[in-house]
Length: 427
Image (cartoon, rainbow, N blue to C red; front, side, top):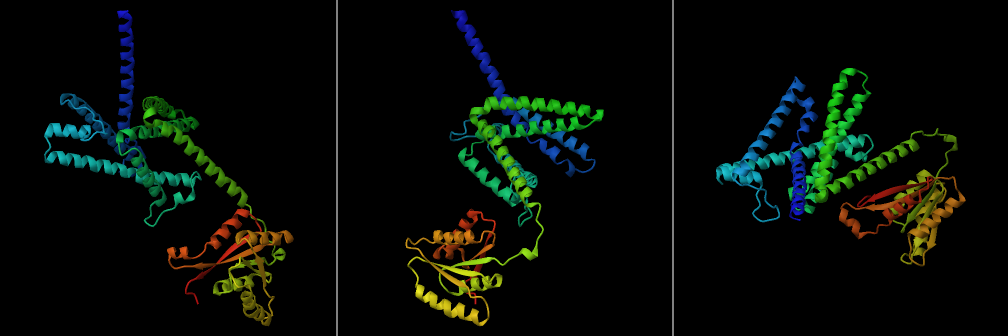
């Protein structure tokens, strides 16, 4: 019995030791991320670019290894262990190490300030690289086009704003505890490494020249190593937050492919314009919704008379306006001048709305006109008051934007919507 218990204890200890090694390995892997920035910036090096990039990468890796060895030696010597970030008085290992070796004097604060500056500068790399990645994806139709547009300061502003918003949200959700962010970073970074290595393997396979075979082997080994590292990270960090990236990455990929498919469908629909036949063109049927006869409506009616001789102004009588006064003004201001000028007189259609609805009676009238003339172009001219200040819009109704939206939702290809703005103080 004692022997069995001892065997079980040893088995559990071996399992825990193996799991701790995997966890430590996964944590250590994140320290290797960032060295790939050298390969991304090879064209920026001074000639000979490749040799200078190789030396830079060697120095970075050597410095990283030296730091790891020194920290690994000094921490046990000074009995320094990682602290819980949720507890008060938290200090990073580097902070504890500098304090233990030099005391909490001026050198300590210089060291902490230097570390802070390096970390702040490293965070800036995301704001320079992420918008460029979004630009490339947008140019390939995997993201909306506005990601590829430069802002006023000649940077890709949309990508920067999106990154800033999501970075702030992540910091708030994870309470700024970096240990909780490591799984997200590690899975994302090593997924990118793995896919880049696989991409290079596929690239070398297309090359028929045998002299590239050794490069194929190097990238194949890199793909295998990064795949193993990624599996270990997912195994050890899944519960700690790695599952978020595992769920989010395929979702984003699916959305990007849907965006590309949408752009492809739009391009196929509009790429072959028909030949214009001027002899078949007819003046549109003009419909102008008005709330009365004023300067705003007058401008829309004048524009409508330039487009067509078939004009109908529609007034929805919801019980708020003086219909008799409107008819009198229409006769004096519209019918008589049009008749004197030899123009066709615009019609005034008054639709009673006992339930005080505005949109439905107007849309029903448009549908009735469409039913009688199915192939004619209908132009809805919507007069709209434009205020100089945005908050002044709250003092007026929003019938014009609402009507535009409802007409667009009808998706009638032979119905066009024209907005005639009347700017306040316009003479």
